[in-house]
Length: 123
Image 1: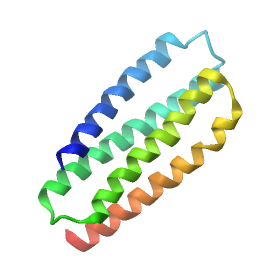
Image 2 (image 1 turned 90 degrees about the horizontal axis):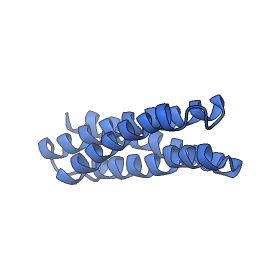
Image 3 (image 1 turned 60 degrees about the horizontal axis):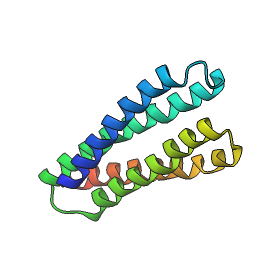
């Protein structure tokens, strides 16, 4: 599906931009532990941007299946909740945002499980 390729590419772009911002714009402005938190968000965003690209390609090659569609949307939700909460936590130091991060992690896990099921079923 073209949409997941576009969303994946946008997230890959944002991951690179946010990584550069963290390395150059936040260095010396936030504590090192928060720079690590930021980097974790960037890393997971890039991994799942790649996952979205893969899902987009697979949707173009395999029979239409809700397994892949749900996998893609769960990756998008995971990026927002996981990486987004880490970015906000780094910038605000409001620790409650750390409680949102695991919800994004669960979304990522569910997305990968659905992708595994789709691969077993259709490849």
